[in-house]
Length: 219
Image 1 (cartoon, rainbow, N blue to C red):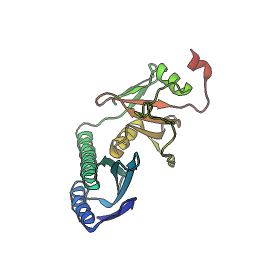
Image 2: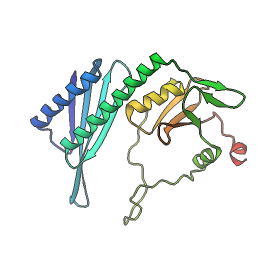
Image 3: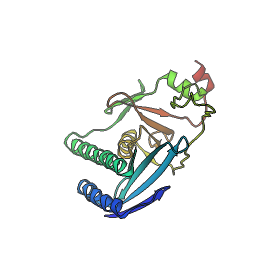
Image 4: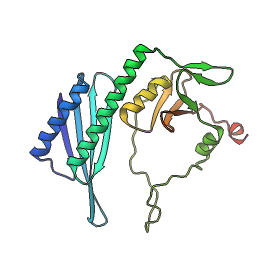
């Protein structure tokens, strides 16, 4: 399996490269069809350099969906260890789900009468959540509100090509990339949708209609 390492604001030493190669062997053991692992190391300094950290982002490419994990620690070696642990855990969970799917076939069924999804542990978002999302009333806590001159801004912007899939497939993809939500186009409705993590192993799903319906949100 190939490895690619990029440093942003930090140099990549031979020692770090050798450690990455060792960790790559562990990943390849869990994902033998993986073809390449991209490693991005970002060094950041805060408060005039008095506080620093390193973020390691791992992206595994191969036959199948992309798998991602990242971690931030005081140095790049500790961040690498944590990111690899996260990636391997995601791979193990995906493998367990595939085994469970073979032993216990499952599928999502939509009940038109009740509007509920059967056969999958996903709950539609409530009307209160939809109204809060539509009106921008959901509060976002960052932990930096008390800092002088703090302004809420978009830190990173990402654009993705739309992918059509079922809700169940979107949940699996969300687990693989290690995020708390996943954007997709629902093949059943052709609506832009997002699945998100709830408490425990519960999930939720929010879908946007092609045309806003203010009277429904106001009811």
